[in-house]
Length: 354
Image (cartoon, rainbow, N blue to C red; front, side, top):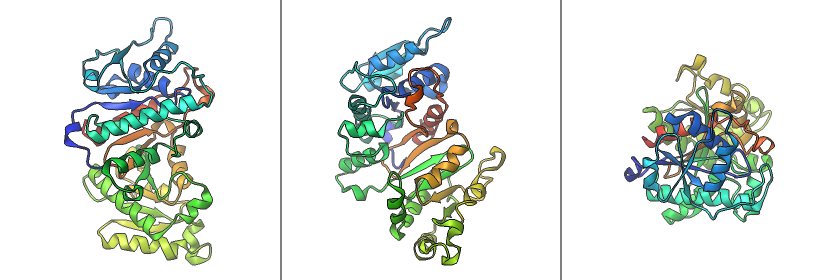
């Protein structure tokens, strides 16, 4: 979300296929069919045969499948006529994927699509990446040493910049039209996440959030910070992290001009930040810093998975995604909802200036 190259401002948006055994191909096909404005200027980085099967599976009497147009290079996406799904073949073709089944082959396809898109974005060939869901177990089975999209993209960005991984700090933001939350830690066990609540980690999260949202809002964001413990520690009665770690990090951020406030009780701070009646900016805070994954994601997802968008902050590229997973239980049934993917496309367009 930082510093998209000017050469990419008029470039298309790439949608990565996701796990081909999940709902990714289906929701991509639905988005192109049902939301042409949102998919304008976008193409699929993936596997042509998989997208054809997904589109055909959605065909109904009187509503034929949308044709898939194979493109040979990125620039051809703009010339694909309305009513077609442009797909660039960026992986070795596959014909062994079973819907709803975890496999190393599906993980390979999903992972290679993301790597291709990351490198294209870092070169300025595409304006943004919208990632359809992948399955972490399948990704691991394929030999990718990353727990998810965020860490894979972080590694690609660091390698492109020629710096160590810890020199490219990133954070995950989940947002909808009522609430934004940014996480101090992402994919790790709860035990490890608690240990990861450090002065440096909280301060870095505040800095990344401030920079990213300042660009989006055009002003300094009002940042609310959740505590780790019940009642934000209750003065040390229920834990000392607020007193010893979180509050000092907030004070350090405020000394840098960051509008941060807290730590607040985690069971109420999200309600205080939520925009009222859909009026942007009507909440007490523009964003809440959460100390670990589920603390921050549960409130946003409760408000509606179909509205949520995942944004990676701190990267030298724009990346968004739906806030749901591969939904193997309904893959191939035609029941998947494309709304979150559509919102991710709209967010990517806004962040990239497309």
